[in-house]
Every structure is written in C-alpha cells, then in structure tokens.
Length: 177
Image (cartoon, rainbow, N blue to C red):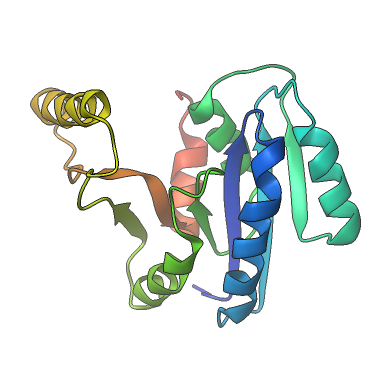
C-alpha cells in the first residue's frame, strides 16, 4: 500500500479565534513532510461563531484546506466519522483544533506508519498542566475503560492518532458510531 498522501481531520466547534494559530503551525509541518500530497479536512460540528466563514476563506486561499459543515452539533465522534468518510488519502491523522496535539509530532507518526504500523497513537505522558479535577476524571476514565473493555488503550491515549487506509476503510464499514 502506498504511503504517499495524508489527510488531517480536525473537528471544530466555535474555533474561529484559534484557527490562525493552528494553521500557522500546521502548514510548515505538513510542507516539511516527505509526502506526495496532503489535505486538511475541518469538520465544523455546528459552530455558531465565524468558524465556517474563516474556513471558507482559508479554502479560497489554499484548496488543500477543506471544510465539512454539519447541520448542527452532533458531537466530536460524529464529526470525526464524517471526516473519515470524506478523507481520500493513504492515511489520516486526527488532531484537535486547540493545539493540545502538537503538529510537530506528525513526522514521528509518518515514520512509524512507513515502518509498517497501521495505527499510531499519540500518548500524553503527564498531566501536570491539567487541573486536579481533569486529572482525576482522566484517571477514572482509563480505569473504567480498562475494566469494561477488552480493548487495550494505553493511559493518556486519546484522539491524536494516525490511521492507515486499511483501518479507515474498516471503520467506515461499521454502522455504529
């Protein structure tokens, strides 16, 4: 399977004020990757601010930036699913718009993907910058997830991940979300 093109999926909800910072960090990273092509798919999950207008303006400047506009807020998981349905590249990286997921790590994801990994997770190693309540909730989430599921999800692994086309196609065949 080819390892030449990359789609970035970014679910957004009322992110108009942060888009410029995100794009400013994302473009140099993407242009520095050894890829034949890339696209960024923003999935607007029912924003009520100027997010969609800013995405349209971004697309007018650079056609590699695209937007999917959902009719209302369906939630992050549905926004990601919509992005996966529209991604056309050899792999996808899911990334948050608020820059909690550093775009600079994409080169590591690509390297691991080209080494044969079909799914690459970004994993938070510490939560020192989070408040006490958020750390407590995260610890509880992973404990509950491990007790209820047979899926091995490393602590600190979230949505920041790369999915190979094989994994994308498998996920797109699932009916549940």
